[in-house]
Image (cartoon, rainbow, N blue to C red; front, side, top):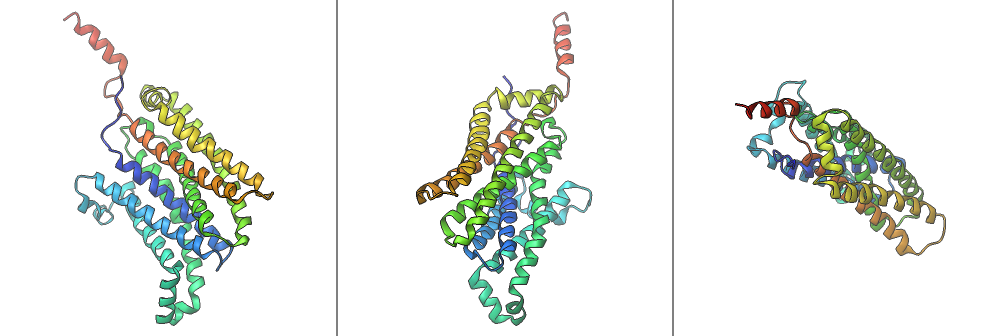
Length: 326
């Protein structure tokens, strides 16, 4: 029986999930803010704080995994090699967190009003500052989403993670989970009827993202199955081994099928007068399932990441056969 990797615990899975969710939430919130400046304050403010909170908790989870947490908190100053993914990622996360935090503060009404009263220039350019931060934060959010996959890929001794399809998969999933979190928030706090066209557009994006994520997941699994013995062994753990129930039930069914069905039904009933409870339950259920599937995806990919064998199975079998005659 093949044992799951135990080099990394479940804590990095929290970072991979929350870091991606943070990026997706910022992109969604920035879109809402730029599409309708000055509108939907509760959704924009809440979405920005979801971004900050998710990234902060994710980073603490990642730092808690290392042997020297305090030293790791200064990682961006410890690494000076500009080509190292650790250096690039550390600086990216630092700058992104600062921009995300500033965006959340500017979007928070009491804070913005206090700044406006204390700083006349800010009071005159408050909306412009918010737009600039949103625009600057968009590429940073994309970078954070991609980095959640590159971080694993940098571990060259684990074949399952050594493919460009992993950053692609985690990036699409990041956009999906972040969008789901913001849609759940908007379902409860947004009462402006003008938000409905944006909600419908976001539901269409959900459909597109889920379909795309499914395609990338199929490509990832099929590619790794044919890549080599180590990769095929890891994929076997996902599809028919110790993690198969989590993979098929929580990742595929709960994380992809249910959100897709919920989004499609939501788009259909949005054109008709349907009970408010139904229109509330659909996005919440679909979004919650997307979050469950997004976390489980990172967990199973992390757990199935076996180290490459130092000796090939064929050579090992031959050596064992020879030893019988000695």
